[in-house]
Amino acid sequence: MRTLITGAAGFLGSHLCDAMLSEGHSVVGIGNFSTGSLDNLRHLRSEPCFELIEGDVSRVFDCGHVDYVFHFASPASPEAYTRLGLETLQVGSSGSFNSLKIAKKYGAKYLLASTSECYGDQLEHPQKETYWGNVNPIGPRSVYDETKRFAEALTMAYRRYKHVDTRIVRIFNTYGPRLHMNDGRLISNFVRQALQEEDLTIYGTGEQSRSFCYVTDEIDGIVRLSRPNVNGPMNIGNPSEVTVLECAKLVLRLTDSPSKFRFLPGMEDDPRRRCPDISEATTLLGWRPLVSLEAGLRLSLKYFKDAMVREAAAV
Ligand code: UDP
Image (cartoon, rainbow, N blue to C red; front, side, top):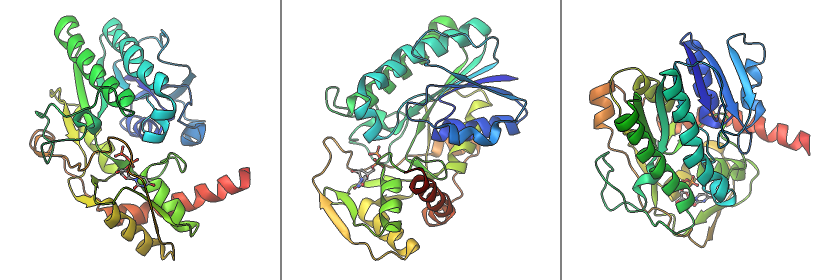
């Protein structure tokens, strides 16, 4: 099996490269490093079954014959996709077209990395796949939310009209090694701030919630979804929900940090609650997450400490 992974140098893309290689696939990764990093793939430098193309999937490309396409290229943190708004819209639209055309041309299976952001500031809780969402189409987050919703529509259209064997994963907040230290996300910000003994920045009241999935669980769910005859969309995320403040307190306890909280204005359109209903994934894939937030944060701390040392050395 030759597998194409777009966004291969990204946080999830790079873990997916590892997973596919360990399943015996040969992997061709493509990325433009706009938010990904070569560091995430350095360990694959001498891997004979891995090939890396530096390129932008928003432009037409051809990687040769592949049996599977995973479309993971996209800025994904609110800091990154609001800074790279037009690029985010491009990769979700043209990038999805181009990767679907590859799947069609070579008769490959296709898996789209979609997002819980499709549910927006949800009015149903927890979120089931059947919920259509509550998205502001013109707000600051729309560059990400709407391009992912478009990519879902396009993927379904390729399934209906072009008979490409597609599936869609809706990824909820995920963290772990290779999460970029400076991408502005809750976990990376809080851990960095706690380790540097700076105050933790809480946007709004901190009563808003998220459900954080450790990266090995997330990848396991995605790999399972890639195999059988289910096409999704399917939620893959950890259903144990915490508020931002609870998460901040946990990070302080695990890092034994003296940092305090600094309350800042809330982000525009920040979803108030987010929690996946994973009954589909449990029933159809036999999947459920195994790593608790506390265990996952403990596993991530060494990576974050090393990343901070590397960052300091690079300055
Ligand atoms: N957040 C926060 N302080 C930070 C970073 C994030 O309070 O330094 C909040 C943010 O407002 C949101 C939640 O944490 O309610 C998760 O944010 P993140 O950027 O990790 O991902 P999102 O789920 O919003 O895409």
